[in-house]
Image (cartoon, rainbow, N blue to C red; front, side):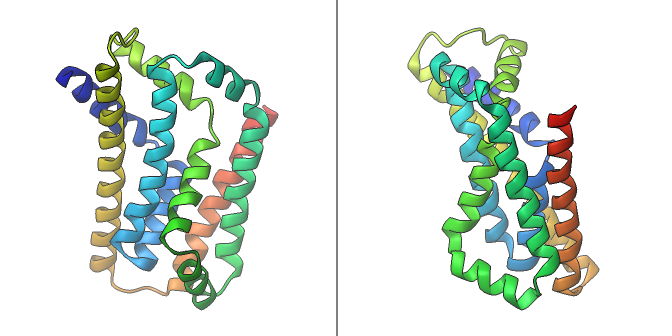
Length: 203
């Protein structure tokens, strides 16, 4: 049981390293609204990762087949959401962005990153490959599967917490830059990620 937990933590850390669009969102929200905002954004991504880890660990083939067969349309929706969020950051004033985030609240920060994280059904295959690489061909006991999934959550959330803390530290050292300027920078990063997701589909 403990070995499954440790393997899950390591897989979660490795899985979180390619930060992607959610990484940009985490840094932007930490920079704009503080450490807790970054943690909430990362929590949504970790929840999405855990859902796919559950499907992979317990072999829910009906669910995985259903999602993988529809991954093109799911990826289009996810890429469109990322693109829209990036364009909104570029176009809106900092005061408007702050008001929108305040209106959306904590649930909005969590849900936005959860939806983007869940819009990547291929993550199931990545988890299956990771489980196989670490010698987890199948989960014999439910407790082992739960330990594995808990480890994945801990590992991914450690990564998002570290990224949020790093963003806070950089902000303190570089001083307070224009919020509107930083929103535009992160907005363009999100636009690039959103555009790249459509190019991947074309290729």
